[in-house]
Image (tube, rainbow, N blue to C red; front, side):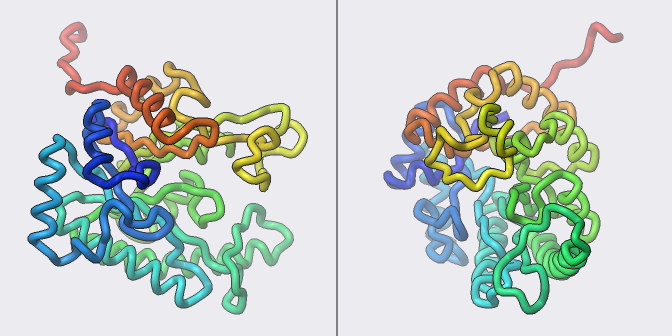
Length: 322
């Protein structure tokens, strides 16, 4: 396995300086943004797309730091009811797919997107219950939209031999493992998970069970390493559907935390072991969104924890079972 980093926390320095910083700490993969919410500060999509010279220069820079790209990140909402926003998101995703193929990276990390609740609505609508009945009707409409769009995009990705790794994220249509497999079943196997446990913890989902569930369908294309801590004194009163601002830490039911600060090192070793059980032996890409630490310290704490948790060698033969 490799330790990777999703690079937006290091946007205050150049891409090459970020690579040097990470290589010095034993990181061997990066997941730069190329559009959408992550932006493209480290890897401008339009600069590298269809430009073989720029791509070769990029590959040389990566090689100089013994680094590889695990995925190109393009998190946006291609199902947005605003046609301009949806069109921009679709263009970003399709260009990211093309660039991913040209760089021989193999994976785009993204969101499923979220439609409105009906054809005349103007804002996305996250449906969390089937009642009153109009909510169930809205959800049916949303899945019709998603099936049409993602079937087309998944076919485009397949043409380019690229996997679409969807981060299961609240306020998106696909926010938990059953929904991820539903979208995979109505599209193709290019659609899978960017498995980020941080969004699952506070929903009450058992992370290792979710890995087994998705792994049984070979549906984990990429993994984010990000932790979450639930603060019971708040959650007992207002639950976990918490709209408190992320920087009002003292009053939130849960916070994103650096790896090891929401769940201990033993838990992350269990995650690594379960991923290997289901056949995933690739990158754990750290996503830093811990408001209680600086980006540098949060990344360093996460890297340190994962260095002790990951396996670096392939499994040996079970000689004791012969």
